[in-house]
Structures are given as structure tokens and as C-alpha cells.
Image 1 (tube, rainbow, N blue to C red):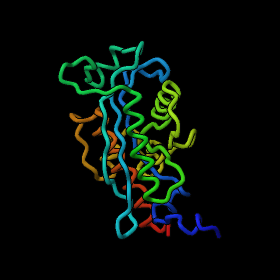
Image 2 (image 1 turned 90 degrees about the vertical axis):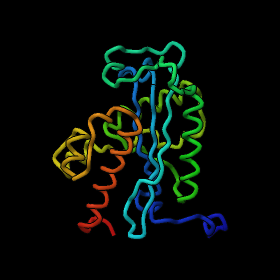
Image 3 (image 1 turned 90 degrees about the horizontal axis):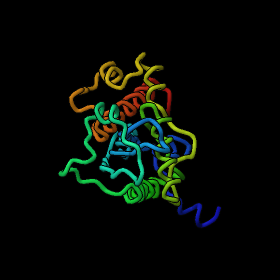
Image 4 (image 1 turned 30 degrees about the horizontal axis):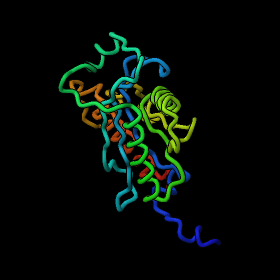
Length: 211
């Protein structure tokens, strides 16, 4: 065994998902096309484990994002989310700066937990994953911490364990509060998705599905 191997940090979280750090994300956009439509908000919830080795949300990083140059703003999407990207009091940052800062926080958490890579957790994860990849390529960002194609989708997990696929209904079935008035903001949806993911993983553990 090398000195580097001896020095590697091993935590319960680093062994739970095969060396991956689960990071719960929600992205609010101005459309469905990751190549052309603007990212308006993004929120990342870092997870940890308590003394019982139950998964818990630890901290949330939320950003308002300036549409990239030439980005499409679909009016129907803006109406659905209620986000006004031109509001004078909206404190937003360039997309490149947002992703660079978020990736920095994720890599710091990976190092602290001894994880090799991050894995995206989201409700309809394919959607969020596409926008992350597009932004990373658009700004030629290096060291994207996320696995390039694997993800953990709470839609599938909720369908299996709770018989629901809609976030609000899955939370209700899990006994978690859900406020529809706060829904469709990146911070609220990411934190509720994190609560739901932790509930499902911990319930599986309590049933004997994980040591």
C-alpha cells in the first residue's frame, strides 16, 4: 500500500455510493433546450451522514444566474417559474462564475469526504444533467466534478418506493411537508428533493437494505 493510499480519507459517505458524493441539484431555466435556453437559478444541496449513518442535508448553495449572451428566454417557461430575469432587485451572476464557484464547493466537499467524484441527484435528473453539461462546455470549464452520464433520479426512486413521480406528491407520500407556493424556485425544490432522497435512502437502510 502506498503512502497516498494510506492517507486517503474514508468516511461512511465515501463508501455508501461507491466513492461518489451525492449532490442534490435543481435548475430553473427559461426553456427546455439546454443548448439554447437560459439557466436562471441553480441550487446545490450538499449531503452528509449523522452518527447513525443516516443521510442528511448539510448546506445549500443557491445562485441567481444571468442569461448567457444570446440565450433564449421562453415566455411560457418564465410564466411557469415566476422568475423575472430582468427584475432590478434580482442579484444575478454570470453563468461561468456561478458554475466555477459551485464546482469549487463540490470539490471541497468531495475531498473532505474522501469521495472520488460527485454524482448528480435530481428530480428528472436527465434534464438538469443536460444543462450542466451544456454550461460546462459553453464556458470550457475544467474539472467538472460530476459523473459525465450517471445520475440518481428521485422520480424513479419515488415511483419504486412511494408510487409517485411528481415531487409534491412524492413528498406528501413520504410524510414530508411541501408548499406549492414556494415551489419552482431552485432553492426550495432542491431542498425538498434532498429531503425526499434522504428519506428514501434512509428508509431502505432501516429495512435492512444497506449495512
